[in-house]
Image (cartoon, rainbow, N blue to C red):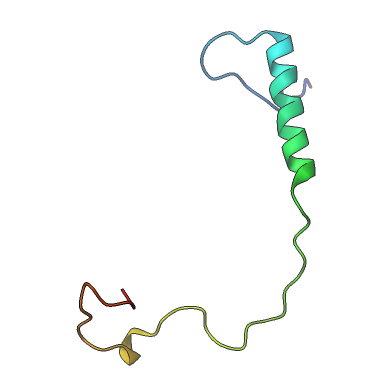
Length: 64
């Protein structure tokens, strides 16, 4: 059973050199990404609880 290609050209005709260049670029970017270190769990929720907010906030407020 033939394997499917990893990269597919959706529109146009890409030369093998162009596919190789974009593949090299994507691989270099993926290798340059820093490893994500596991972070400590948060002690509180990261979102605002709307029931603790005032009913109206002025549009020029610093809390906008």
